[in-house]
Length: 331
Ligand code: UDP
Ligand code: MG
Image (tube, rainbow, N blue to C red):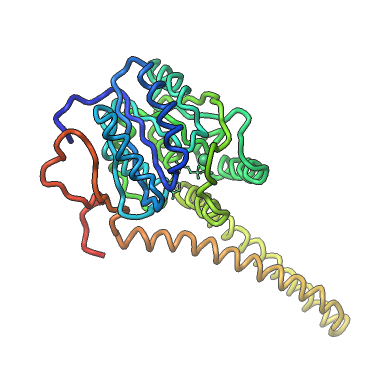
C-alpha cells in the first residue's frame, strides 16, 4: 500500500459520533502503545460521524502523523463494515480491534500481543464484570447460548470487540466480500490456534451506545444467518412433526365421526391451536426472509462501503480507487 516498512502492530478503531470521548481515548491509547516498544500504527475509521469526531481525528493525525492514519467513510456503514475498511488499510503483522468509547481499556492490548507472540493467531476476550445495562447482559448471555448450539463457533463472549488477529487471518478476511457479517465469528473460522483471555471492561465514559435495540437484533441475525442454517432446518423438522400430528388427528376425527357421529365442541381449542400454528408459520417465514434478504443484498454486489479519503503521511497508493469493494457492475 505504502512504501514505508510495515509496523508490527495495527490498531483498528471504528468511530461513529464519539467526539466527546476521543480526547480521553487518545490520552490513554497513545501512551499505552508507546510503552509497548513495538512499531505500531493506529487506523481510525470515521464511519460517517455527524458530530466533529472527524475534526478531532484530523487534529490527532496532525499531532502524530507517524503512527496515525484516518480512513474516512462516505456515510454510516456500521461498525463491522468500518472495521473491514480499517483492515484493508492496515499493514501490521498483528491487528487489534478496539472500540472508540474506552469500554475496552487500551492497557490490555499488551496482554493480547503477548498471546500472539506465543504463537496464537487469534486472541478473543471475555469481559470481566461487563459494564453494560442489565438487559444487554441478559440478552447477550441468551444469544451466546443459542449461537453455541447452532454454529461451530466457540466464543465465550461474542460481543467484546477487543481482539487480536494475525495478518494471515486479516488477509483472508479482506478477501471475503460479505455484506452482513460478524467479524469475530468470521475470523474464528480461519483461526488455527485461537485463545481467549479475560479483560477488564469499563463503563462508557461519555455518550451513549450507538446500537439501538433494532440494531442489536439485526446484528444477532447476522451472526445466526451468517454462520448457520440450523434455524431453517428447525422449521423443516417442525413442519414434518406437525404434518404427522395433524395427519393422526384427521384419522382420529374421521374414525370418531364414523363411529360416534359428528362433533362441534372444542371450537375455541381449535382456534387456539390454529393461531399458535399461524404464529409459528409467521416466525418461519420471517426467518426465511432474513436469509433471503441477505442473499438479495449479497447478489446485488454493491460496494459495501465507500472510502471518501484516507489521511496518511505517506503518499497514497497509485491508481487510487475510492471504491474498496470488489469491482462489479454499478448498482
Ligand atoms: N460504531 C461505528 N458505526 C456504527 C456504530 C458504532 O463505527 O454504526 C463504533 C462506535 O463508535 C464504537 C464501536 O463501534 O467505537 C462500538 O459501538 P458502541 O460502543 O455504541 O457499542 P456497544 O459498546 O454499546 O456494543
Ligand atoms: Mg461501547
